[in-house]
Image 1 (cartoon, one colour):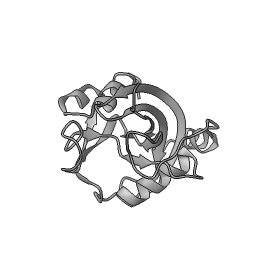
Image 2 (tube, one colour; image 1 turned 60 degrees about the vertical axis):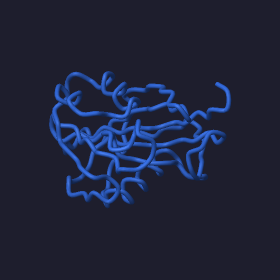
Image 3 (cartoon, rainbow, N blue to C red; image 1 turned 90 degrees about the vertical axis):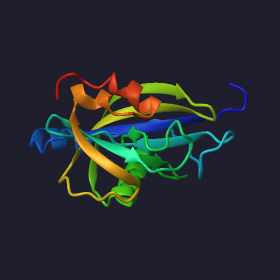
Image 4 (tube, rainbow, N blue to C red; image 1 turned 60 degrees about the horizontal axis):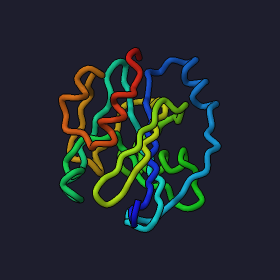
Length: 173
């Protein structure tokens, strides 16, 4: 793919506070190897993580800040960030959600994966089922958020990778 790097993005989906689901989620671990990077660029493979959060039948949609290329600036996404050297995807996701939202989450099983090539990088977006203890978070790295049912997710202007991932989300909660 020329000088384009491959980036890995991991997503999480959160469900209600069902005790048996919580037990299954906290028991799951992913053993796949992960590339890391300090910042996105054309020459460094990078693993990035994001969380698809669900409250009942509604998914948490986050609007990106007004920065970066116009094909992602102010678009909607599932929150997350980069994996740092020495941390797993799950550890990175926990850290990123704490940093961006001051929020604690539970990581679960993989539910989908897409690959998307942008003008200056390529990502593989992997979705995981997860949960949150509560829904009391802050907008520290986004300009807006909405809770929408699956059938209304397409009403927002999503980043292309997140849009493709939405098509793979389970029909039933």
